[in-house]
Image 1 (cartoon, rainbow, N blue to C red):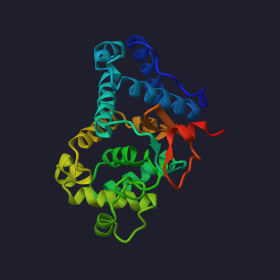
Image 2 (image 1 turned 90 degrees about the vertical axis):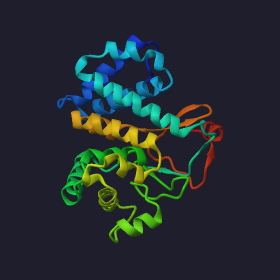
Image 3 (image 1 turned 120 degrees about the horizontal axis):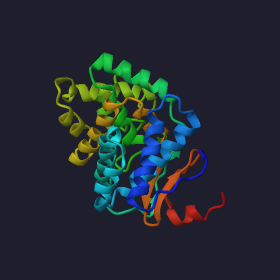
Length: 260
């Protein structure tokens, strides 16, 4: 199950069931790691299927148990914010390398250390890490030249990185906490701090949706951490597997035609 690519269910009732099973497994401490990864992947695919189907929302939300309804609502809303930010699908895959992320327990310890040092909620750091590089799966520069697992512009890193290595996970999370704290997070101005990180209100709303889910149940982080990385293209969503690497952008059709 863990190795097979999941497919989103075809109708709202079936999607609600698919999401319920997946989100329940993510929140169950008895779920084995391989089943957790499969559940996280399934939930991700289901939410991506709903990002352009607002007419299905009522039926999907009615079909999930009340204990999961807010989490489902937040996840769907976050996907739609990012879909709006991305605009038209791309026809090339970026010059990135895909790697295993730092294990979830180790990341939780780093987020907790950053929260103690700078007063920034760990869920906020985890959400930024998730949306910037898939909790560290993506190694590469953004289209604007941002670097590292928390995607810093060089000048911002020079100001807030405290002399650390922008590509080091621990250093990058500490730098992000330092920057978010200086931008208002420790004064309760979370939206302003996130807007300083990325000047787009859709980004702010999307990150806050993920923060809300993790605040309600911290095991949700394990599901986010287990998600693979997808890229929206002109031929559909493309998952970039671990080990993917390219030093230059690749046309999607060229990459799909390569033997594997």
